[in-house]
Each structure stands twice: as structure tokens, then as C-alpha cells.
Length: 111
Length: 122
Image (cartoon, rainbow over all chains, first blue to last red; front, side, top):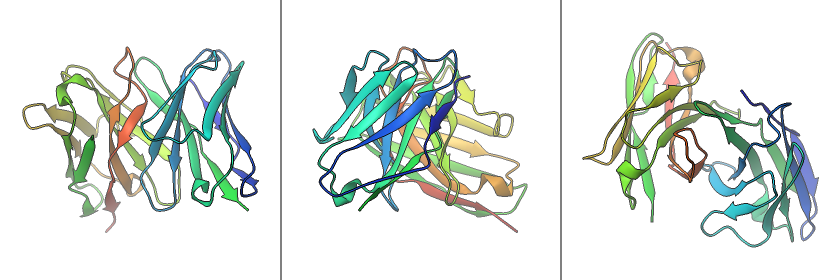
């Protein structure tokens, strides 16, 4: 089954951009993933589905500041014009025929 | 607007049982697979189980296989998770979630409930 690897933490300044990475394990580089955001004390929120081609589909109400891209086994979430409310944990997820897997999450700090 | 409301969490002793419910509204419930995802205190998200729209297919994480049972009542727009032989490591917030656009039962989640806390302790 696939494994997803994420950096444990990232930081960027208010108004700047940040690119978070989710890496698929060997043999799974073509997998589609999803990105979710979890603000402190809240339930997760779906952000987007991201394909290996780099094509992505965002969830309802997700700001234009959020975008996705792909390169090989890497899937990226870019957040532009960082806002204070973007400080959160970000999880990637993928799935197979009978299982679903989350990455360990990246804690984003907005400075 | 899709809304998912979990209930049934609480404190239970090791070895005990608990049944979680998730009431869904704002969607054609039977058309979508549904999942349970949990989060232990201070930890990341862990997928627990998924059920197809008809209820005919179910899958489980190895950590709960044989102890938990997912089910649904499409006439009541409600998802369930029966949890037996509970262990301390099952302590977590349990989220109900609706599956997104996939060709398989296993899928990402595009709507999440607010969660219900299950604490397993003596």
C-alpha cells in the first residue's frame, strides 16, 4: 500500500507564499492525492484533489490563494499571500482499492 | 449544504463497547461512500473504515479489523461505527466524512463532521 511523507513543520511570513510537499512512496508516483487543512481545535477541511498531471479540483469555498502542482512522486500545495488563518496542520491523503492513507501532516506557522 | 453530525462518544472502560452515529443531511446519502477517520490526542489523522453507498462493501484499517464494524441505514441517512474490545490506543476524536469523486469505494473525503471524542480508560 502507498506511503505518504510530509515534512513535520514549515513556516513563512504573513503575505508571502509557501509550498508544502507530499511525497508518494516508490511504485505509487501516479497516485492521485487530496489535501486537507486542519486549523487548531477544528475538524479537517478538504482543500483539493490533485492528480499526477498537476490538474487539481478544489473544494467548495477554498480561496484562490490555494493551488496544487505535481512533479514525479511529489505533490505540492502552494499557499500565496499567506494569512493568519492559514496557520494550520496540512495533511495529504491517498487511496487504493481497499485502503486509505494519510501523511503525517505538516504544521504551518505564519510568522 | 452537506452537514454531518456525529454522536455517541464518551468514556468507556478497556474491553468495552461503544456505537457511534453520524447523521447526514444536504446530500443523497445512498449515493456516496462514507468513512470514519480518527485522531488521537496531539496526533495526525488515521483512516479507520469506509463503506460503499449501498453498504455492500466495507474496508477497515488493520488496527481495528475484527473489532470495529461500519454500517449504514440509508433510510435514516445515518452512518454507524460499532466499536468492540476497545483499547486505550483507540482513544481519539472520531470524524465521519463523505467520500469525494472516485471510482472506488476507498476515496478521499470532501466533507467532514465536527467529530466525537472517545476515551478508553479505567
